[in-house]
Image (cartoon, rainbow, N blue to C red; front, side):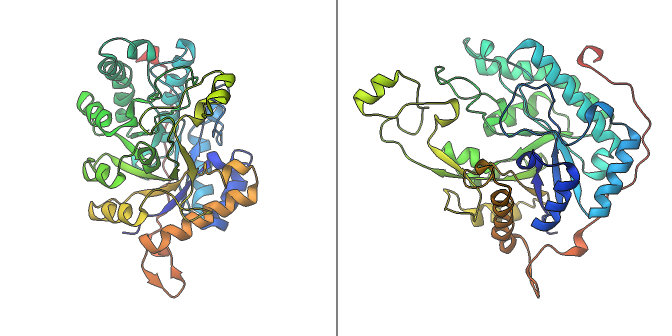
Length: 373
């Protein structure tokens, strides 16, 4: 089986869904991971809302399936927020939104159509600051997510956790930058131990381990492949810093101190670790061996989608649609020789691998909230 290449739609927040479908055909990908963030959410970085989640039922799902089949594309959905920490009122809204997305995935066929729901877990720093804080966060995850995963299982839906530590979610005045529980493999292993259900797993983004000086190949060697459903295509170029080292984050200090000492300091929460977000094959090299990474995935039998998550400085962060599309095209071309057989048209995804989404007829369900579970 040849792995399809998809696009995560956060890079196209300024476009409508129909416009993204056109871009997907131009870029030559096989699917979309649709971002469906809360419209009243607190995040302002790489977010988008490409489905009307407030008015989504069986009829809207039927229309969407027809639209994607017409474009010969597959899909998943997701939103990525803090579900176990942060402001308590926002936390509950995020949990309820995940339940809504699980219901939407059910209307779209759920696991029958490989429509997964992507999410973060987040982190509770009030618990984390206590002795045994990591363990307490795992127990809080178990408390919050057990009913969520059980609800998803009842509907035939799988939930996937993305492994970004969300290092910029707190101000540079805080010491730690670990803000999303599944940010390391050890945590993910423990999460599945605490909730053994089979209908949750992961979206693995190797770029986050690269700046943590961890080899993604070794991570995959130790990953339970039954849990791995998607790969995020995003790269990192590490920029070693002689002043702050490469284990702990750079800190916020008074500008006058930094200037007098002749050292860099953090000017925003996202600059604390020394790397640049890139896309493979676009503009400049990165600190990852993509051939070795793809090879170990093949060896371990990974058959899921490679999803381009475009946050690259030279692409998405330019704000120019031409550069955003160009970066995605470059990532496809970079991966193609690693994923596909050589044919008359070069290294291309075989059309014979495409399978349309099944047309399902789901009954409408009452909207469920955490209090109901």
